[in-house]
Amino acid sequence: MSNFQDLRRQAGRLITDPLVPLISRLRLTPDIMTAIGLVVNLVAAVVIGFGHLLWGGLIFLLAGLFDLLDGALARYMQKTTPFGALFDSTVDRVTEGALFLSFIFITGVGAWPYNVTFQLVLIFLALIGSFLTSYIRARAEGLNIDCTVGLFTRVERVIILTLGLLLSQVFIALAIVVVLSFVTVGQRFVHVLRQARK
Amino acid sequence: MSNFQDLRRQAGRLITDPLVPLISRLRLTPDIMTAIGLVVNLVAAVVIGFGHLLWGGLIFLLAGLFDLLDGALARYMQKTTPFGALFDSTVDRVTEGALFLSFIFITGVGAWPYNVTFQLVLIFLALIGSFLTSYIRARAEGLNIDCTVGLFTRVERVIILTLGLLLSQVFIALAIVVVLSFVTVGQRFVHVLRQARK
Image 1: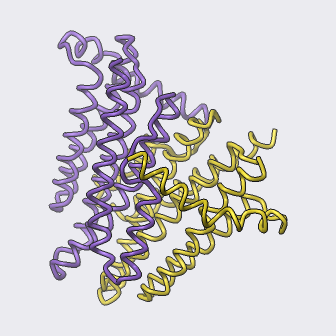
Image 2 (image 1 turned 90 degrees about the vertical axis):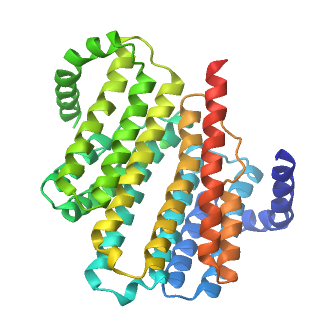
């Protein structure tokens, strides 16, 4: 197992080692590389959602390169920071969420009533938002950053979803969960950023 | 904000305070309460998936009670452990995943071709498995438990999904991601359990 991970790390270095000095000369920081990776990943998700799997796959591969490079650049510049690690991990989860969401559209769901697609997207976004809210806190705590702030945590989600079920208004409840979860993710992210700047 | 959270905590205590001494006399441990909560939540998800929203909502509410009680019992018995905290958090994520998955079936997806439902479930499980793999590690690290083991982490997921896209076999790739992600979640969970027993 760990042999495989060593091999993987070495293979990664074969790609990143020649590129990292060039990038650092371009004055790109690791966090900027992470942000570029996020954008490229989102483009890949949109392309895949439109059914262009091969092109989407190639763009996704390019995004993976930025993913390798942010960490490698941080180590090369000796600029590994807890904020950078949290940003990188959070972006990884967001891009995975976006990729899986794009897969919904290649099941042929587009051919069904419009409101069904909308409902499926809502369920998906609610799951992603809920997971991200909990993930960002767990990851921050793993990096010794306090992250207990948050408007809309699990208890609030449970209350809203219970009301949605009891009143047969699940999709209204989900819409509330989506909006408030992503607000909370933003809130926690800004909180971490502020602590990092101190 | 923090006033609201105080209020919420007090409301929670109004429910748990009279129950906790009773439960501790029944020799139920906090981890057993978490496990019962998991089962009740999964039952709620199945009931909701079959379209019985009101009953599902009531069972979900009952599951929420166990969710309040495990932590309250642990504090009452002075048995709060890192393993218990990780178990509780992981179960929270699993039950949220199950609940959101059950919502797929109330969109009316059952009326469409069988393979579409299957594909949607596959996408959903792949997202849940991927998130859980990363979550369990982040949460363990937040509790100062090392959790770097794992057969199938993000890099492996990216490789399999890229191949799936390039070869136009996305759903085969997703099936692999589902199986190996959940194996990895189990692997990490057992790893944490073993460390906790030392």
